[in-house]
Image (cartoon, rainbow over all chains, first blue to last red; front, side, top):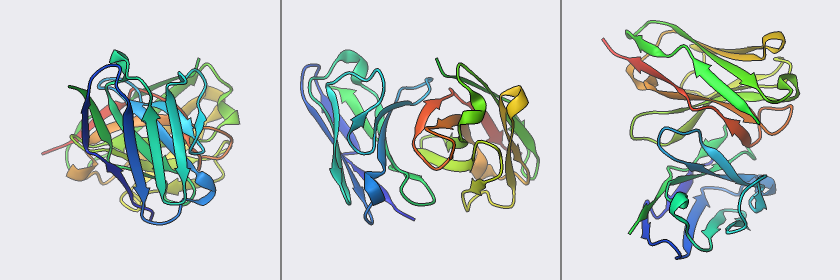
Length: 108
Length: 121
C-alpha cells in the first residue's frame, strides 16, 4: 500500500498570500495518478486537480498541481477567503487507492 | 450537475448491520464506476469500496473485506453498501463518490455530502 504523507499539517496564511502544500508518497505513483481535493466542513469534497497537474472543470487557475514520482505539490497562487479548507491528496495508480492525512489551510 | 445523496446512516450496536444508499442524478449513472469513502471523526479520508459500471468488478479495503458488500442498481440510479458485523472503528461519515470513468479505480469527480454511521453500545 502506498502511504501518502502531507505537509505541513496546518498552514496559517492570509488572503492574497501564496500557499504551497506537499504530498510525498512512500513509493513512486505510477503515471502521475495523483489527485487533490478540497474539503470544507459539512460539504462534499471537491476535486481540484487530477493526473498531478490537470485542473478539474470549473477550478480557478490560481490552483495548480505539479510533481511526479514520489513528490507532488499543490499551489494556490493568491489565496481567496473561500480557499480556507482541508486539502487531501490521493493516489489512484495502485490498489488500494489511498489518501494523505490532509493539510488544514487556516486564516492567519 | 452531478448530484449524489446518501441515506441509511444511523446508530447501530456493535455486531449489527446497516444498508447505505446513494441516489445519483445529473449524469448517466451506468457510464461510471462508483465508490464509498469514509471519514472517521477527526480523521482523514479512507477509501472503503468500489464497483465498476456494470457491477462485475468490486474492490474492498482490507479493513472491511468480508463484512461489507457494495452493489448497484443501474435501473434505479442507485449505489448501495451493505455493512454487517459492524465495529466501533466503522463509525464515520460515509461518502458516495463517482469515479471519472467506467472503472472505479480512478479519481473521484463527484461526491455526496455523506451519511453518518455510529457504532456504539
